[in-house]
Image (tube, rainbow, N blue to C red; front, side):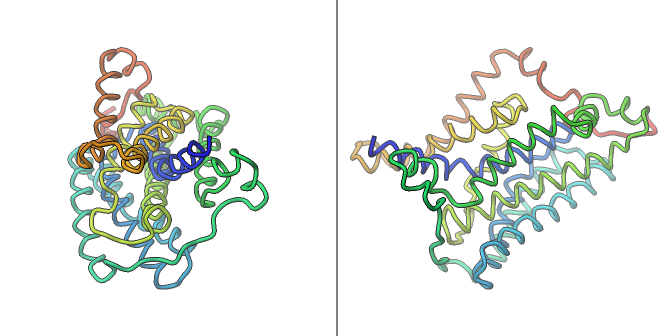
Length: 306
């Protein structure tokens, strides 16, 4: 039990950026937009958050800068994919490549620098035996991510706005015929997704590894994309999936710590192997995926064509 509590806490910490990014991408895809640029968005947000946090000594400003950069990247994607009606897959991939190069260029002068440690946990609750060290020693952004997940679940299934968002993802032509602005709703969904990916990137550079190195995100944007499909576009399952993948990420360090004689390269592969295995398992039943996937996902909307 003494070893289990730190393992749970570390899994939550590692799963938080996945949860933040996946929740944003879920809203994108519920609106019918496939954004493969999450990796690049998170990288740009990570260096922006670190640069602002390091310069101002304010992690809060760093998170705000990360969210803003994520929204700016999402705006660029929106202009290309929604206004110019470019291919969403190609546009997202280009955005990821662009973000990787831009973050590496901007981050050159910040390589090797580190942020001071931040106070974490909820005073009083973090002293409860087992439960405190396991669940109440997190950074405040981890609890924001949990609340955000609950709020998104309520928004999607308990509000009229959530119903409209889902309608735009299922049948944009019908939503347009009813007088709703499909492009406007998708643009707002992309802005929200960009802000979430921005917070995820900033969390990585400000909290998870409070420093900047090139390629800091290390494929987490792609894992978050896979997580939305794994969760069949449902917020509660996204939460469970992010904790699962966070646990797999931490497992490699835990096994090394207890002296398991497995090459470190194989242990580093565990999160990505788990992603491939999960996708292979859920792909065995394409009807199940098709039943839950938004019908217009990845398809451009042209009002005149209807």
